Length: 325
Image 1 (tube, rainbow, N blue to C red):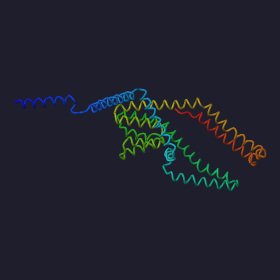
Image 2 (cartoon, helix red, strand yellow; image 1 turned 180 degrees about the horizontal axis):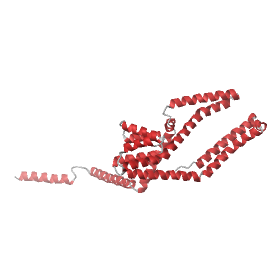
Image 3 (cartoon, rainbow, N blue to C red; image 1 turned 60 degrees about the vertical axis):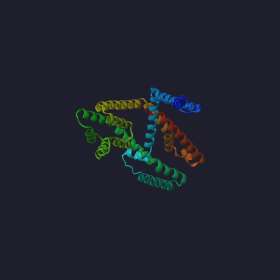
Image 4 (cartoon, helix red, strand yellow; image 1 turned 180 degrees about the vertical axis):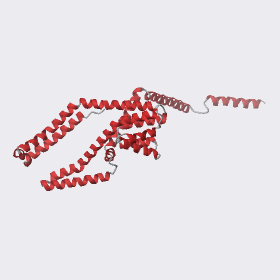
């Protein structure tokens, strides 16, 4: 009995010692655990502070500005391609045919200038300008005019959707009414939109296609409103009514900017046209007086320098009168 009591006492004392010493762990192991707990707590506190800082108004504003700049950069990059310009001009997406026509036009102009002037450099420059610059300018001019017509009628189309929703029509029927009643190119673009939706394409994908064909801020706003309403619900008529008000305010601002900058535009136009106009006028009145400028090598050098400086001046004036809003 004495031996049994001694064994039980030894086991009890040993168990208490094992528990008090941390389960047999060394002091270094316990210190490492405490350090891990402290570091982990510091990391969690740092993550919590970063999360709180990210939710501040300044951080959200910076994030929104960064997102808008990235979208603006992507939009500019997308609208500068030949395919995007062809789509905006309503000429399809046959980029290969565009380059074939450009190449043929450049070769024809170069051959004509070579036969008439007998100057290879002038023929080469004229062929390059006609083949590379003229078709792009024509397509850009057509795309700009078509986009302007689309934008002018877009706010009326939004009003049609608002009145249709208030009268109980679904959105798809309102889009069909726009495709039938509105002028071109707005009607054609909305007919394509309704056809894509009718073929089973989701609304957000169909609106993205519309934006690719007509890359304007108005279409982007319209797509955002419809996508938000589709996902979260709400009063679509009120949201589109507010959008119509914003679009009309933008149009009014554009007209106001155009009126205020009309004097600067006229001045830039006169300054840009004055030197070549005077040259043409003197060439008609006194051709012998101006012939030396074209026949002599020094005159050609002066003409080249004048053309470079005039191009730089016209570019700077265009940047000064080109207002973005």
